[in-house]
Amino acid sequence: MEQVEQTNEQLAIVSYCRNCHQNLDAGAAFCSACGGQIVKNRITVKNLAEDFNDRFLNLDSAFLKTFRALFTKPEDVIGGYIDGVRKKYLSAFGYFAISLTVAGIYVFILREYLMDSLFENLQVSETPNQEQQLAFIKNFTMSINEYQTLFSVLSIPILALISRIVFWNYKKYNYLEHIVIYLYAFSHINLVFYILAIGTIWSTSLYTFISFTGIIAYIVYICFVLKRLYRLNTTSLILKTSLFALIGGIVFTILCTVAMIIMYKLGVFDALIESTKTAGQSKS
Image 1 (spheres, rainbow, N blue to C red):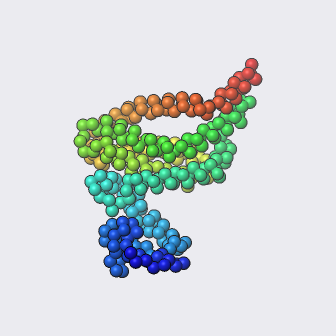
Image 2: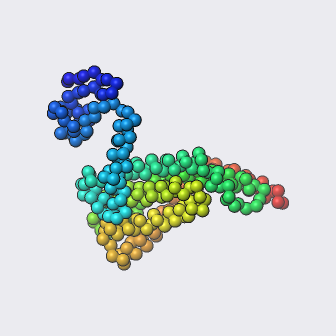
Image 3: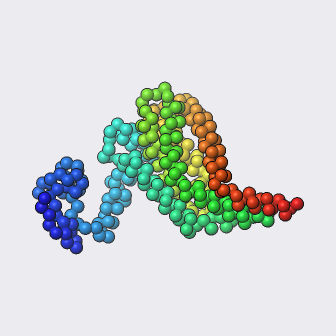
């Protein structure tokens, strides 16, 4: 295969596609076999910025199209992907990956710059171990946030299973398709939450409000998505939501109990238990 030596500004010219290794037509801008773009220039700040703009900031980008459509017509995005549409919107795993990236940025900002300011006005009981209580709350909060990615990954198949059970009498989507539903829905509400959290993290009151209303937003959005996908009427929506809440509550209680036992075994609560014992002894 013909190849021209690489220069400081351009990649070596080859007669085949670097993505699929099929032969290229002369002067082709895209591969006729896989559709990949023929990149000729080496990486620079300029083309990196252009690529970022095309993929994320451009009004016609797949990301912004997906982000907007998941607010107004999630059935078009999710149902379309399940039915084989792959080019119009960002893929389910691609959207999930972006939400995890934003979550990572949020955790980094929280840990490195804002954790102390968020907790400086936190009121804890006036006891000799007040500092230990505050330190435990801060460490516990950071542990929850740092494992957010793991929680997100584990929650998808669990939510999909609960949803499949709730909609057992509907044959429209199988279990794997329910996973796609929650990859999109969970990623979307996560993205919105983390963007709002980053934007309001400078204010303890606003941040706290966003954090507490986030749970309600999750529930409301999931109901909205399922209503649009299954075309549920109000009565069916209420019944399915109630059943989902019942099963989800049972599963959540079991998982929280298991998580607390594991954390106890790992010694997460040791400092708090010890400081509580010390405070009790000092009182007596």
